[in-house]
Length: 153
View 1 (cartoon, helix red, strand yellow):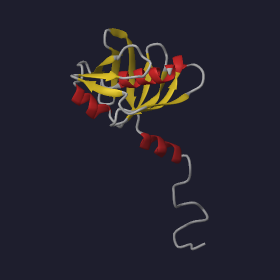
View 2 (cartoon, rainbow, N blue to C red; view 1 turned 90 degrees about the horizontal axis):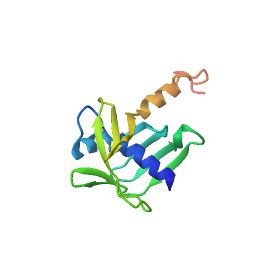
View 3 (cartoon, rainbow, N blue to C red; view 1 turned 60 degrees about the horizontal axis):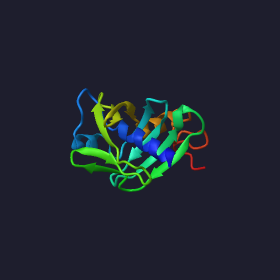
């Protein structure tokens, strides 16, 4: 449960950030369905995605130490309450809401409302770039020595 809450806080805090606070609609367009890497004020880090149904999936490493864990939070975990983005997590005595500030086109900072120090920075993660980078160390597709153009072996 603690891991899920930390992942949630990290991802929501990761929602957008530029010197101005983002509106709910701006945050939705900037964040929903996209992969972000995040680092929080106390060292927690990971990667994750907030899905369109409000569910959250990703990884978390508490305080940047120990094992990386996979976490999944159910639909409706992240939701809009008026003009605020909030989290509904079973077992939490409160429903935290978040201030989201866009830093640039790929980065934002999220903090728990009323606790500005409790923030995370999020950077958009492009999974295609990761795939391209990892495959670039191999031979180009279709050009392996045993399979060349015109060779029907």
